[in-house]
Image (cartoon, rainbow, N blue to C red; front, side, top):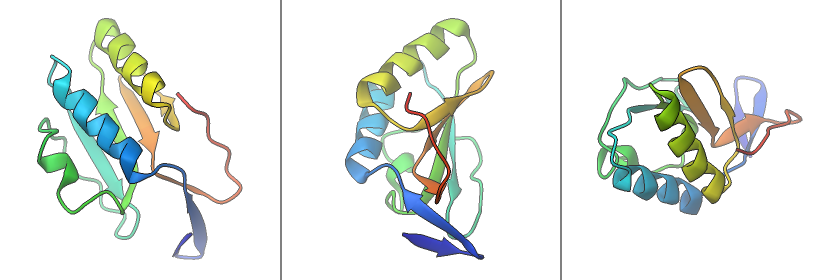
Length: 112
C-alpha cells in the first residue's frame, strides 16, 4: 500500500503486466504515444513514442497510470484487444486509454 497526502492507494497491476504492455506495444506496427503519472511526485510525463527503453526507465514502481493515445478507431480497437489479452485495469476515453497501476482504496476499477 502507498500512502500519499492523506490518500491511500493500492497497487492493481504488477511489473509483469507492465512489461507485457511494453513489449506488446513495442511490437505493434503503429507508433502509439504514451505518458505516465508518477504516484509519488504527481508528475505527468510528456507524450513519448518509444516503448522499448523509455517506458521502463526508472522501473514501473511509481506509475499511477499509463495513458496510450489512440488516434483512429482502428488503432483504438487494436490497442483494446492487446490490453484485453493482458487483462489490465483501466478506462477508455475518446482518444486515450488509461491503464491503472494504483487506485485509491475503496475505489472500484474495471478491467479492459
